Length: 149
Image (cartoon, rainbow, N blue to C red; front, side):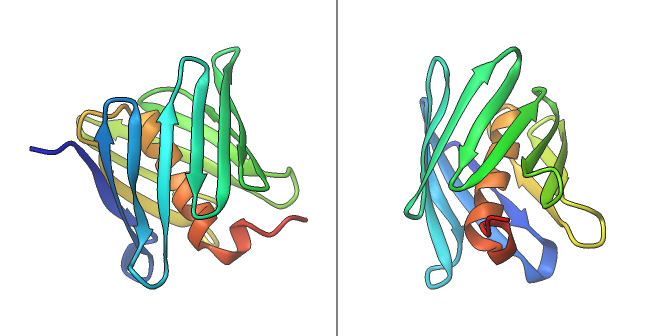
C-alpha cells in the first residue's frame, strides 16, 4: 500500500490535500484539478526544500526550529507531534497549532474566526511534516495567505 498524507484543509468549504510519501520526497496536490497546486517537497539533512505551484519552499533546521520561507511568507515551526509556529509577519500572520495522535493530525492555521482548520491522515510521516504540508497548501490556495504586507 502506498504511503499517503491525505485530508482536508478548511472543512466543507476548504480544499483536499493528497500527497504520496516516497522516501524523503513528498509529492502531491492541494485542491482539485482546476483550482489546485502541485506540491513537491524533499526532506534534506538540513531542512525541507521544494515547491508549491510555481513558488519555492525552503525551510532550514536551526536551534530545534524549522525556519524559512514558503513563497513570500516567513514560516517558523516547532515540535514533532505537537507542532506550533507562525507564518507571515507579526501584524499580518497566522498562528499554527497542530496535534498528532497516532497517524492522525488535527490543527488550526490562524484564529478560530478567520483561520482554517485541517485534518490529515499522516501515514508514516511525523506530525511536523503534516503541519508543513498544511501550511504549504494554505499558502498555495488561500489568496490572503500569499499577499505580502
